[in-house]
Figure 1 (cartoon, rainbow, N blue to C red):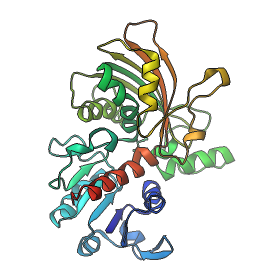
Figure 2: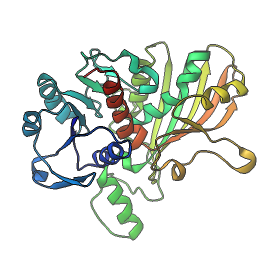
Figure 3: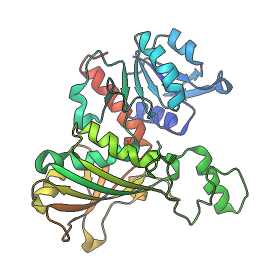
Length: 329
Ligand code: 2RA
């Protein structure tokens, strides 16, 4: 299988290469794609070196699948060109997620909707993926009415510049700023840009993408997304109200039985999910499971996952695995 990784030199692109190798995805030839300034660079993959190429060269090399993590503008311009050439695109940007003709896929939840006609497939936002992964088994059983979520997002979600800003601040070095404020010893309630309604795009992704993935626009969602100086993963405090009451023992059972979910929840021995545990892993970790005694049919959860892996690279590659396994290319 010829695989193009578009954005191969970025944070998510690098994790894609790592995960492709780890999962032994059937890559017969890797086509690393990046911006003009990176063309010609060598990328090492499974013991072989591959030269970074530009977009049109990548199309001409006729990959079967192109994994995109190169920003929305690049995807809007180039994903259709790859698709027109018969290449299946799985895109990590927000460009196609809300396009009614495009599938927004978390394989454990809705991969069954994929067909060979889908030539541009959208990978949901990282903070959406971990939330719907934790909520899907509960939604299927108790039907979600409303979600209130606060996120505590790793600076790796912003990109290399923010990681460098935090490193510089911790080392006492003045450097380029990804944020107008210090990240070190701070919490910034501003992920992505503000919309007219006073929410950020990151917060509205949690609203809109959740409704699309569950195919249910009656689900009410309100979100606050906060950037914190941590690597390793995004954390989320989720308060979820269901149409129907639940049994807390059954909730734990449903979560324990769900592929890709690990329940880490024993307050007697201070066991709960944290980014330091999630870092480098593909699971979504769920803990602090407890009934919200202030409101009927309502549950509190704490959910942590590596935003670069299940939140981006791994979910993308799991979609590719599903396409290959079901002959949908
Ligand atoms: C963030 N979800 O964490 C974004 C990155 N895709 O900023």
